[in-house]
Length: 239
Image (cartoon, rainbow, N blue to C red):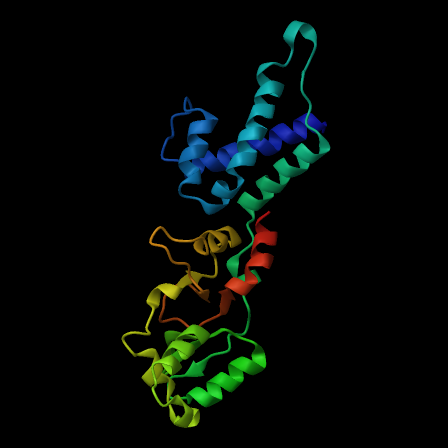
């Protein structure tokens, strides 16, 4: 198979993928308009959108201008263009799943544990957050930020015995609870979904962690956790 044939075959598979995701089944719709629509609902397509537009320009030069006065194709994919096209094709059809970049197993603590024991555990592992369980079910995400804010609210904190303070007293303090700092995600979500979830929200906040379960339900056992510290490997997997 020639370089051109490989490129066109890979491009056509991506085109078919976009069509399958689009609500527009009319084949008269151009590639660009379908790409715009699907990029709004598919995080992977959104990430690859700029490259796909450039690759579409190349595809048009190859297909629509082929055979001018018998000259054959006036454009030919470079090795880099072909490699990128095939990479996008593979990434869309066999995506890297969120669970593969998650930290496993998940270190957690019971809400009956003491702040002293949990803080020492977090320091030992260099963790900035830890899931809190109530009767084995996730109930909150304890972060170093919450701990510092709680300590700052105690006037005589020098005399507080951290081993006498239970986690439940901290995570349920109205001024400290922040359910926007994390989300749950199914293990079948992709690394592109993960990268998109960590983007700043229009409301002006960003999440600290993604908790991975079987289907993304909060009542399911935690199978993995992805934090902001994992973003370098997440971005590497989405390129």
